Image (cartoon, rainbow, N blue to C red; front, side, top):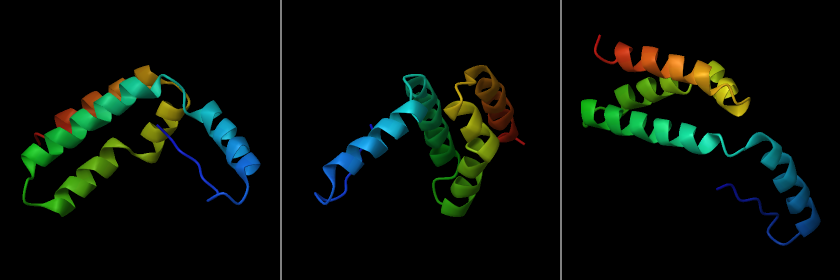
Length: 91
């Protein structure tokens, strides 16, 4: 869920921004969000006491290229990235 607010200053602008965002945030992102949540759980289990290692691992998971793939609906490409990322955790 994505929310947009102008704190009551311009509801019409909020609607315009919401509609623009809706073109980027499609239903395909639901499955991707589940993958990202799974990745977060994996990283938290691997590094429970090391927030810096968790942060680095999660930044590798959602690299700019991976984010672009997700936003553009290229889930197959993201799944390949996911597999490589997951294997890299055991190295």
